[in-house]
Length: 452
Image 1 (tube, rainbow, N blue to C red):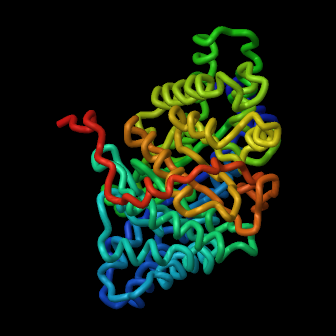
Image 2: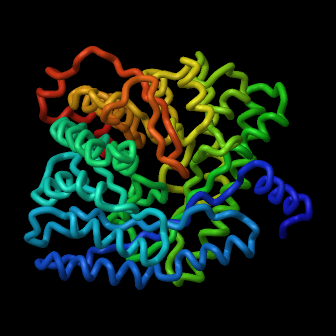
Image 3: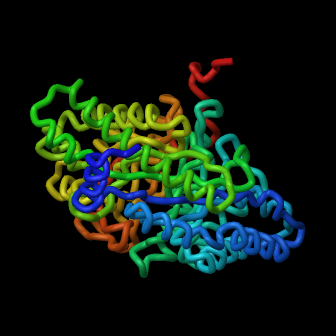
């Protein structure tokens, strides 16, 4: 039973501290939609998505009104399309992306994820066709998101896949250059990708998942920042306890919403992802949490340690609140989506190298980074390889969402609007990794991956 104090606290968090449920994401298996005729497969995909997700948006809006808790996004993730489309004789998979986009528009969601391939140990023919189709797919659709997993702690790092996807990123940037290369904002390269992530652009519905499931992603950087501010000059242990307690409360709300939505939609509840996901809104910044801890600017010495404390406390609080915590769960540090991160870049406190160090202890990786459009493909590949190495050798998920904006140079801006925000073009190390990247092959898995 909720007390009056808890109800008032929740109202304050919503009204003053930007608390929200960031997303309700319906995961849908498309494994029964494969067909040798790609037109038939696309028709099945559209029909299944619209049948299962037809009332997803309406249900989310009803729950938001009843609980007085904003539910910002309603989204869909599907089985990696490379697995579904491979049964067909289609030369490219654009029609699959168009079918996904039409279905997403029909049911009213803002994004649909799963134009994806898992290539951490090598390519099948379907994987190659999907990856090659990404630039056209993302430039021809509004709602489709793509992801490629290029590494795992058990398989190592597929450098051939990284080289290929880096060329795809450049081509995607070129095809969407008139919109500041927004296609790249819908493309994520992963190491150790989770199968139940509700957040875009990396969400897909894993092969171990049920036919249909509801996953929720919570947020609340503003709530955590306010709690730290109230804690004053508390020591590190007390600070961690403060964050844990707040993460517990946020997670409880996320699971309540997720279970309610699942019950009303007649599908299982999956997980609640307790990631702190910032937005461009003032007061909704992970960087500002770190600064509230005592850093003059995010990126200053101590930033990695502060982020480690934050990430660990969020996970501990979330795990205590729910037995079904999943997805990414921790703290996101996307530059374009976080006003504090943007300010840190402008002030010279935050560089790509410092962000890379911070990703060793946070939930994702180099996220929503804008770089000069003339950055070589091999440099992009090396940046992705560095991030994958952090994930593989630390048994954690890492990812890269990078935007090499054509015609842009350091100091220019890319503008996306909405949750994707805006980002300054950042400096990239000028020294080449071309010879290293062109070696190709697979970087072997670390010895500590042999745990059987």
